[in-house]
Image (cartoon, rainbow, N blue to C red; front, side, top):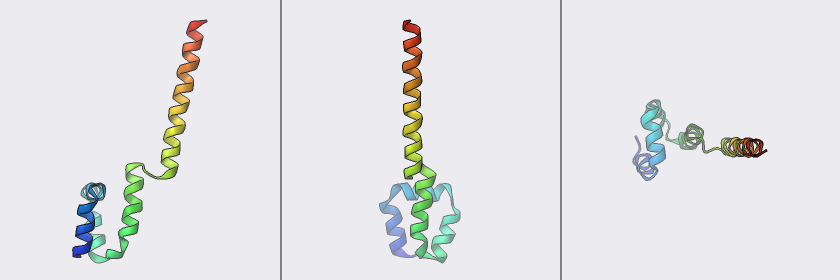
Length: 77
C-alpha cells in the first residue's frame, strides 16, 4: 500500500474501521490507490452518512414524534 494512502487512512478512523469490516478494500487500494474517492463514498453509505439516509432518518423520527403526540392526545380525551 502506498505510504500516502496509509497515512490518509490513519488520519480518518471511520475509513479505517470501514476497511477493517470490509477487507477487500485493502486489495483495491493496494492495486489502485486512485479509488480513495470510491472508498469514501462506500464508507459514507455503510455508516449511513449520505444525505438521503440522513433525511430518511429525520423523517422517521418526525413520524415517530407525530405518532406519540397523537397517542398522548387520544389518551387525554
